[in-house]
Each structure stands twice: as structure tokens, then as C-alpha cells.
Image (cartoon, rainbow, N blue to C red; front, side, top):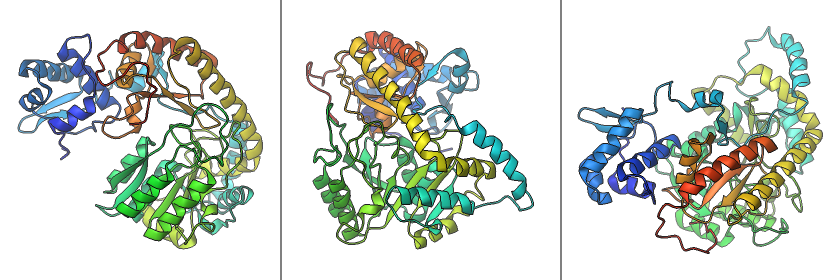
Length: 492
């Protein structure tokens, strides 16, 4: 049993503007269900007592009891004697993964299909595998020739790197968790961007970090040079936050930030690293989407290359992955850092992992030398996806706002009203799974935004927008007392 306990006040914050045209108990149950599905109420969390929540929401206890009963009947709550009501997920019959076989579109994943060259690389890797079979197969560091291929890619991008500065991991997510576990202790502060990649915040929290957010805003539509001052980050706010909070670690996505699509200017990178160096903050640069460029003006160097230009010498740890550019089924990621940092991470890795799969390493090692051709293929796919999303927003939701998008995997759409959760919940009823904006924030923020991937086919994207259109007809009519008609969506 988890010790996590959600207070009535905290749940009220997460609920946001939840009251709709349906009966109150139904609207409350629907919103709590979405919070559980989106992970904003972690499984095992004890919800507030019915009487406590009724008082906080100004409802009758009968209404809250009816909502809790509906959630229990659907498998989202479990009542435990002496422990109250605990968040659960339904059994296999109602679990979301089964929905894919029923024709559900899963837009919670911003991911491309496998690169065209992957089948040939997989066949060649299978033929190469017997050479490694006499060994134990446990590889905690990474195959030497794969580490050299990764190092070579950094050198091609303008960052001198040798294989001893590279550690291969089981995907980028393991890299984030490993870094957090190695460099954070309970109570340490960690700077994060808001919005951000939700599984990164989960990894940092599991390591005991207290999160300190800085805002990233989507770039305005139109030409946006990478050297421009308005890059989406407030460099002065970053400096003030680091100076005030002295975070042990800063987790940032400087290229095609997920979900906003913004890219950090060289000037902001230098100011971030200078401030981090002055206060002993380790900077973790998640570059998993860094090379998914469509038509970005300028090509910034990897984040670590700017450390020499900044005042001081900030420790910079880079994270990369094959999953975004090659295929999500290749669970190969890596960490690039100075040798002492890599040695510390190698020492920490066996606590949760004894080795990275061999065959996947062989496949990625064969594909990395083809990066230029693969990225050209991806550029074409993403350009088509971007134009499809822009066209469908203009024709279906002319009041929505599409930011400038020069790369990355998704568009951070401003929907004009704080109803993202209601929209995502309604879309499920029309065959679409999509993450609500608050999934990328803290405490219910970003209800005015929706992340829409640009990685799907025209047919799939058109189906998704048809589902959103049906869901919007209901969601947009829900009361939203703090929304002012006619205003543009802002990051809150």
C-alpha cells in the first residue's frame, strides 16, 4: 500500500474547472478518472475522505459518495477498510492497451514508424550476433564500436567526444532515472522546465527531488531565427531561479523542446551554463529530439559545446536516444559526459540494470553511420505531418493557435479555453487517446493547451481531428469562469 495521500485541497487544484452539463457526480467521477489515466493521480494514492472533499468542493456528501461509487464500479478506486479510497486502474478487460485492437487511435505517443533502413540493419545484426555469443552477454557499459559510433556523431555535430565519454543505456528514460539517482539525494532541488516531459519529472521525484520550475513558452508563428532573443526561455528568470534555489541539477530540453517545440538560442545556453557553473548545478541536456530538424534557421551545437564559452565550467550531461530518430522499439539510449561522471554512472547502473540488450546495440551501431540519410527521411515525414496538422487546425478549429514549429515530434496547440482535460476525456468516447495539456505540467496547469503529434499519417490525423471535433462540441460548452473570450492562450 502506498503512503501517498491526496488532500482535498490538492485534489481541488488537480480537478480544475470540472463542472459540466452532466450531473455533478458524473462530472466529478469523469475528471478523477482522467486524472488517474493521465498519471496525475498516481496509482496507490489515497483520495480524500468523502466528507472532507464534499466540504472543499461545496457539494453534498451524497454527490461525492455517488462519484466515488461510480469510480469503484469502473475499477478506478478501491475501498480499503481503515485506509479510505485508493486509486487503481481497471482490470485487463478495461485496460487502455486493449483499446488499440478496437480501432482506438493512440495519440499519446509522439513517435515515428521505423526508419526504412531498419529491417536490413536488423538482418545484418542477426548475422553478426554469433560473434558475441561466446561471451556472457551482460554488457553494462555498451559495445565499444557502438560507443565509438555515438562519439563520432557528436564529433560531426561539433562536440569533440571519445568513446570513454559515452555510456549506453536502455533508452533515454533509463538515462534520466540513472542520472537522477546518481546525483540527487532526498530534498535536493531540481530545476525543470514547465511544461516538460512528464516521465522526467516522475524520475526526478522518485529520486527525492523538490522540483523548481521555469517557464518555456511556444515560439510565435512565423520566421524565428535560432539566435533570436525571444526563444521561449526567460534567461533572466533561469539565472534568478538558480541563484535563489541553488538546484543540484537542472533538466532541460534545449532543442525542439517537448512539448512546445521551442529551441534555445546560443545566448540562452551560455547564460544557463554560466549560472549553473557559478552555483554548482549539474546541467542535464535531453537531446533526444535534437536532430529532428525540419527547417530550423541555424544549427546550434550540442549543449555541452557552449560550456567553454560560458563563465566557469558547468558539468554538462547529455542524453541521446535511438528511439526518436530510428524507432521506438529500439530501446537504446546513451549518456555523454566527462569521464569521471561516466565512471560514477557506471558504478550506479547495476543497482537497476545488469546490461543493455546486445542485438539492439548491433542494430543501432549499423544505423548510426546512415544518420544523414535517415534524418532526411524523417524531415520529409515530419514536414508532411506538420502541414497536415496546420491544415486541419485551420479548417476545423480556426480559433486554435498553432505555434511556430521547425522540428520535433509534436505541436503544442493553444485551444483558447481551459478545457484540455475535458476534451481529452471526451475524445476517448470517439476512439482517440490523447494526453491533456496538464499531463505536461504541475498541479493542473496548461488546461489551455493540447499536444498533437505530427508523426502520424494523413488518414490517422484526419480521424483524430474528427474525434476532437465531436469532443470539442461538448467540452467547449463547459463552464470556465476564469476564461476570457477572445484572449490568446498563455502559459500559466
